[in-house]
Image (tube, rainbow, N blue to C red):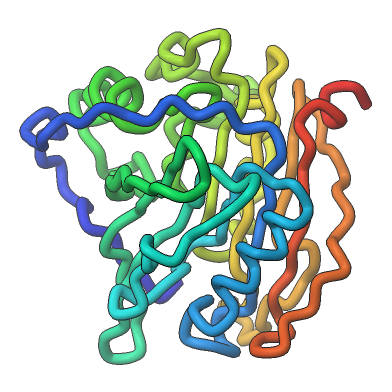
Length: 275
């Protein structure tokens, strides 16, 4: 994966400025992915996608990571929607043909017209090189202060590795206690990803995180080049789990004139729970 994240070290999280998280009430989520080799980012189609999701009654738009180049930052002044109330994106830069994530931003609004931003950064992709104290601080500080937003929790890409697969016991374990930090009314975990994670335990972890009536939604970009030079172009570029089981969600009949690789799916949380 040609990317890096802003905080690859064990720098204390509590040294960062704390900010109040928005209190969201998400119920109908539009998830959007693309092939990141076709266009440099979503910018040419971004506002058209938002208008489409709004026309379908979505209150939330969740994009795969590497969403917008920093130079193509979202223009809040032109956002006017009937239903959309939250937009989840990642800004990034591209240097020497490598993508580097710079900031994750949740844009939110009470009325669809006046918008605010809630920024944070991905703290890790793997826990193998992280001290237990750092991971505990992620759980105790980052999660409750920045990542829990009303009925939604955001885990960026490999942060889902905060739960660990035990090979001997053949099960996923919550050794750092993230589940204890999730309030009962926070029943949606949004897990946007840079590109496909192929290790078998990743699905096991999403399945585990969705237990006890939670919905876990992951969405990623196509286009990753694997070690055998095979390029990922497999659909769908997302998974949805509820209460320990994977749910199949059909793609929307949305076609972007600027980027035909873009795929859209819509998740109605009430229908997921009833199925």
